[in-house]
Amino acid sequence: MWTRYALLALTLAPPAAEAQTQWSVSSSPDLVLGAGDAGAEHVFHEINGVVAAGDGLVAVSDASQTIRLFTEAGRLVRTFGGVGDGPREFRSLRWLSACSGDRLVAYDVSRDRITVWSIAGELLDGFTVPGTSRGRPAYAVACDPVRRESPLVVVGWPAIGARDVGPYRPSVQIGLVDWKGRLVKVLATVPGTERYRYPGSVGDGPRRLGKATTVQIGNGSIYVGTADSAAVRVIRADGTSHRLAWPAARAAFTEREKREYREALAVLVPEERRPAARRALAELQLPDSLPAHGPIQVDRLGVVWVAPYRATGLPELHQPWVALQPTGEVVSVMLPDGFRPFDIGRDHLLGVATDTLGVETVVRYRLRR
Image (cartoon, one colour):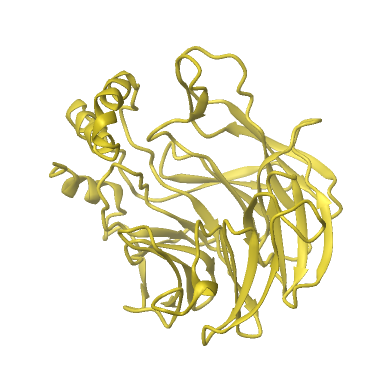
């Protein structure tokens, strides 16, 4: 299975002749949290934020609904947060960032709430985050890692409503929110993440192998990746926009590959449930091509990083990330397999490594630009 994907890896990656520069990542991490027999304080589950927090500290948030701060030597300094509805607690902590300062900013999606913390664990501020339409919360939030005075960018909730069975792509609005929790303006309407209406009572959810929209902010601009093509749309505060693109080819997803993909998912189900799973997967409408890219993020120098597309059930391919500099220069960066960066600085990549058993560790690699 998947022999054709050796060629697919080449068509999805920027051709070496087109990339003007290549940056390098150290062969091994210089910081590892969570490996070995370090104790329960080093056990992580569904990490959603990793931040270089200043003073040599690393902040980690995960499904425990807490924020943990470690020294670079791996010693736990403090833990704050926890499950609850109090001002220092979380119901569904989904995002953690430094937001261009010596502070930590967290987003609780269940309470539509931003909280701002010092690295000492002191709660500095908290407010409700509005969406782009009255009465609806934000679907996603991001902040500028470079400019502290920049507003938050929010993605509005998609209009789901009554739909026929099958795939669809709702539009979403992008807005700016100030640090008092006030919607400043709606900047644009863009295609949102593809969704799928399932038959019966199963409901509605993101489409398998569907295109996902990512929105980030940095250097005073909004960056939108819709995975339709090898390009990111750049929206300025005045509403004008342009595109940053890189060389890449769209890959067709053939009927044979769809059958192989369905079977790869079916074998993940307990054996007694596989016949039913195969029937349900056979009725699933899969796209005819894979998304052009994965999530995007902005580093502390204002460079836009674009991940290669990956999904459960597809083979892991060793593909480079693309770094788009403000000048438009395209840089190819090969990251270790199983590693996802959360905090990209001038000379480091700090993030999460996931092994084949799903065990998560926090690691830091050195980056040479």
